[in-house]
Image (cartoon, rainbow, N blue to C red):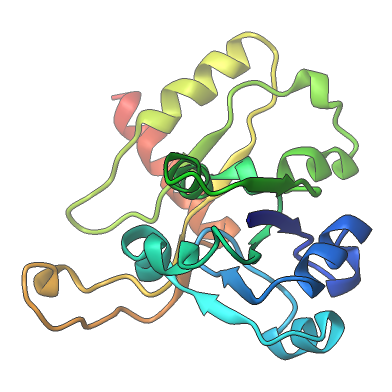
Length: 206
């Protein structure tokens, strides 16, 4: 069986009881480390779970999913996800791959930013479409998020804006080469996100 289970990003003990039991019974445990930021280090998780944890970077999750699913038809394998398992299409793809291979799947949900955002005092009923604001480069500055924000604003709705993270991303000029050279990790800050938003606004309002 393959178990895809959510972990809270702030504390190892925020794992559900069912999730803890599932991890403890697993022969292998992976930690997905490319779609969100975990504020707990791997060693603390290993101590809490009593299990060795294999970090699954972007390359493994997106191009070596078969390694994660290896042997899951006869033994239990867990994939830890920061937040809720269905918060990213990456995890949905792994679930679909498992099911297409006849591997039973168990999904164990947890809190994610999509519901924890209610802690800021805004009603969840008043949020519109969620958008992702990607990390701008000199040659790539997509701005489709701007239209969704304007649509939400016109309906009197708040817009959840998910900020981009770059973890173990290949350097562009090496994408077509055999060797893999990675860029240093980058995390979009709030000031940078605001700057990108205002830049697009100025361009659209010309």
